Length: 402
Image (cartoon, rainbow, N blue to C red; front, side, top):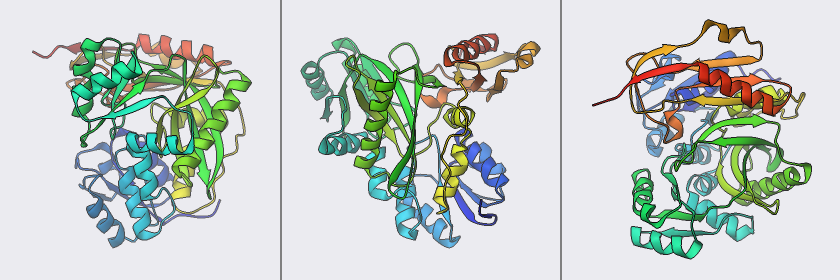
């Protein structure tokens, strides 16, 4: 690999989701700048140059990027700053997602419009501006439907609605997490939910990796785990890969990683649910590495710096990950982890990101996760079972808030 030490990278965000980028950039000996609105975010303390700047303040980020003459700009596991990154890339003529593409990917309404224009398979949908219109659209599409904020990430503001008396609640939940005046109402497709990690370079989608998804029970559509390899048969998987490539092309994701959620319907057809022009969350970079040997985070950095990437698998190891979560809102009273857990050679990572006294929330959105378990095994089924069994052994006791 070409020596890139000393090149200047701007990492947008400093929370737990950005730590892999910060750690890899330190390993590559890059000149790192980190920004986050929260001056106490964990990543702010890991580098010499950190600035308390809101990641969606486009002008402030552009000014900082110009002042320091950065060579690349990156984020991962969140859609929120993607338009900011696109604007900086356009402004400084850097490699990566453009502003127009960022808008198409970050605003679910624009995603739906672009995919419809290019004829890419997706659910039926309606764009609404009021609770009354949400009800009309739900009746038109037919229950169950998905009501979602159009510009959020981390599964915020997304609700599955199975009865009309829940429409009002779902609409308010979506409005809570949007800065716009519209909300999406989408057809709920009964089928197999899977995801895909894709990587593009020079206008070509170089690789698509399809993985299994596990969602939280109940109305909040929050991913709780993933695994490789895909459970789909070869025909279904090839159809999913083709659909993802058409989707990426339709949205104009010509450079870097993308994270795609799909539903495989009863006819084996793949329908695009969500698209993010960034690395996936919920342990997906770790799983991609363990499954293929490809360092997704490093390649994301290289691509942002305009360097060649290497996204060719060198192995195929079944693996799975699940997140840790609190079963209720409250304050962490105690964390109990049996010492014998670490004796399992197939446990790769067990991470708890909260401590005693921290405030935690029941799982309603991706950022409510409080840790992770990553495992390998001979099959994805065994890896999933192992990850879930280890998760059950970790006891996080909470005091309910009054």
